[in-house]
Length: 449
Image (tube, rainbow, N blue to C red; front, side, top):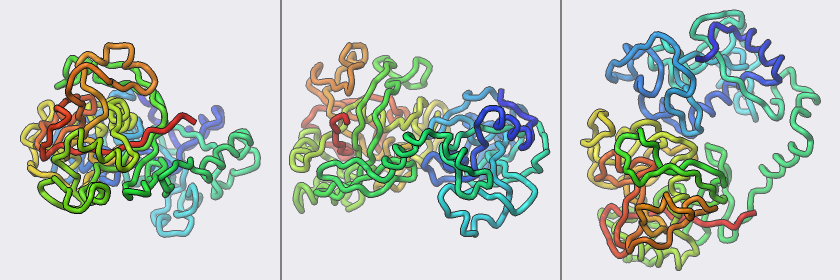
């Protein structure tokens, strides 16, 4: 269970003994949002299945639910897009900052690594607790308490600041040296010297801190995902799973993947005006009615690729292990699917019956939009229902090249049942098939540095 009944002063004593810190208020909200701009990291609302709060007081007219009246074990509720658990609810979390209700309007609030050091005798609390109303658990909600106050719903989440903030009165040369000088120089060089990638122009880090690049030929914006190891597939306990979704560890090198599904205007720019097979038409709608073979023709003209199935799931999950990158379920406010068929006993919702413009729904923790729903996305791989059990599936950068005459599609589409939009769900079509809900998201495979 989380430690509770601790004051801000108690937290400072812990930090003095451990070399850790409380997060600044800005660090806390950045971690909580995990790239989202909705009231909660899970979307437009929350439920007691995602957050431990007082379910008798739901958010914005929502349905009432469970009121546990006590803390839960840490890590027992879904993680956000950064893989952080219980950022909403369970216990209120102390932050380093002094509370100042007008701080957001002051110049110090927009400095690098802002920290409020004056304004009141209170200290900031964030996130809400098990007794909080749902609105008190919003990503942006601010509360405060006297630094000596102890209460059963007050806890904290430690942080570590590699380099001191300029506004921290305790900043010193010793604090700066908490990270070795060589490491500090490496971090500085990395931030100032983004990786040069032929055919791409570096833009800036996205809201999640990942570098974005523009493909010079097509104008498509890509996100550079760091290489790493993740668990592909789904656990046996996941509702709606297929037996072929056997969990296994996969390691990938860094790669670029488009920030959103390829648009019709980008398709026409590469393939020629009048060559748009999509219905309905719209410059910012995803291209649809394209086959795997059509995608290969696009890639041949542009030097891009389809993502491998492993790259696609890594990008979709964005560090999560839940059925969806948004948590244990989805809503039509997050994903364009057939809301008449919700996930695992959820509530029915909106049925749009058509595609929506790219980037019009919330991004996942990597800053990628519409990884779930809208259009099914072609992958490079040949479909093999038994591939996850083969040695090739756990090689570096796995790619299935044999096993059937069909190709993998992922993510679900606007007519899909919710469980087809799960991060682990696999489907397939013949490479020549064209359907209104078949589209793609280009990628670019990088050589290891």
